[in-house]
Length: 526
Image (cartoon, rainbow, N blue to C red; front, side):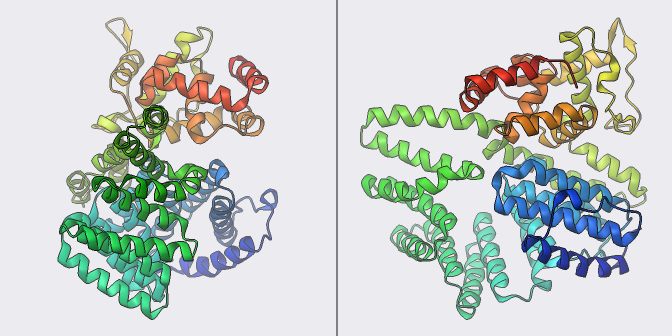
């Protein structure tokens, strides 16, 4: 069903979702007592609402529970798909996509946002619930991966449904920022003026500070460094007044760029050290923290402070491992490549193709270099079997037969023996030579592992809470007895990066706990 405008189901869902939100916010919930997605539509709608609101609650109140939030959002989407309402599906997909986006898992977020955009582009009359939020979040994501025009288009759509004055000021501000990134300074100034007028009307000083910080980018583009510095300093002063620490960090990094080029090292260092504590406390701020330390390194070089320079170079090299794996400019560029407009539009133009077939081809496109998730899973199986000769093929029976589809033909992939070598071997060699970094495919593998080995997966989650999402990626492959080199090849990083990650995990756990962890990793599958 491709529902046009708000469907009756969505009209029922909206008050259910709002009531669920208020109950979760007030702390009236226990996850073990949530309805298990009953048979009636209303039970399913309540289940979806509870899972989404709980996921948001955990992220907002405890940043370490992102894995649990991810599981809750997965369950919400699975249940949403059973209701056959594309508008509601768009909403649920964007909730999970935005969750990954907020936690800087860009390529994990991308499939959800692109499927949501696909549905919206395919049916121009489709109207998701809470449209202003849905369009805004799609716009933010597309801007982040560098597709500023698409970001602008979705923010303008959001504006049509937005009545809150503060939200309007934020939309105008972000429209101005995207215009700066496009090099359209006249449009940027116009949007910033509208944002400023709306923020003043709403007496929103924090938004006014953010606008000044973004206006500084226009001044920098036009070589007005003195004016840019004044705007950034005003931004920081007001942000500090309202304890808007994230905004202070953002403005301080931009200001440091200017001060360092002007040789004002001590001034820049003092500003950076004021925000360093906040940046260090938040794992999801690694990109901005990395930039902050790059500035401190530039200052150390400028001041000929060799000891600090050596320390910061080591720190940045260590941080780069994480950036290479899961975040940073390279990951964002890859996401942009995967979201290439021409390829997406080409698929959207195939209007005579049935939606199910079209969607399958569209999702297949998301595999890096045309390699589907099945190739990754077959490679993991092959390598695991090579390390554990006794492991039967059923060990990876979580490979869903419907996923065994060739990217081009849509036909099942054959595993017949060709010239004495089975195609699983060929696929694994292809993957190992391609240096993959396809996190969306990895996410599917993770859930497949959890379904096949629920005891192992739950034991890791329960007994080793030190494991972050990035640790888990290496650990699951390690659990399948892959070597450090093989893990690195599958994740698209060097073996040395994997080795360093294991060393940091050992240090974080301590020797006694790490010994227990190794016993678990090297033990039989559960």
